[in-house]
Image 1 (spheres, rainbow, N blue to C red):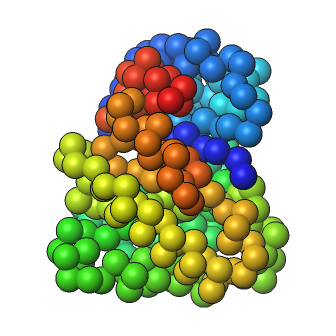
Image 2 (cartoon, rainbow, N blue to C red):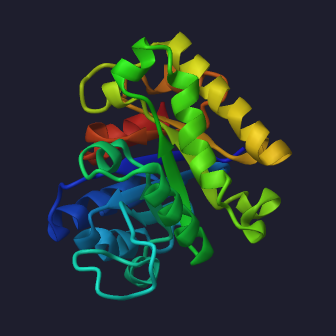
Length: 254
């Protein structure tokens, strides 16, 4: 299965800063091993800068951090999949915990965004994950099942089965480990990723084995190798440690 290393730059970097970081990554990853992809989810203003810097390096892609499920219209402040594609993005992030818990996006809206983006030619990294209260209350399985089912139960026939392979990846990110310096322990990651894989098999059958599951949550150069060695961890979603090119390169190299 393809390994994916994703950088989420969140609300950081001007265009000049993004262009420099992307150029540094392109130079450092000019000879990526087969079977590995790197995606940078940049702020909207910097997507074109990142895409331009990545031209000619097949394993590097630019992505958007959000999109709205409409082709166009009176949706002030929103961005459509067509606009992302026009800016040079080939991926989009949906369901990130900050969108869910800060911006108030519910499962239904996240599902609409995910499906609409797929239908309009974008690859999607769809994020799921539980809060600390939910984990301590023993609700991990229920939360992940609810979040996954919201998308897959509404998936149109044309996007079922093999049609999703190469187009959809799942990002498991325990909310309590994002930007906190806390990292889920090996047993916690193994458990959550095994639950995710099992739930996917219930929802999409054998296709589940071909959908990458990434871990996200305070990933650093010193824990990346250990995380990647775990079963059902097919890549990493990196926040703060991806802002410096050398740090992100170390994570990929680990």
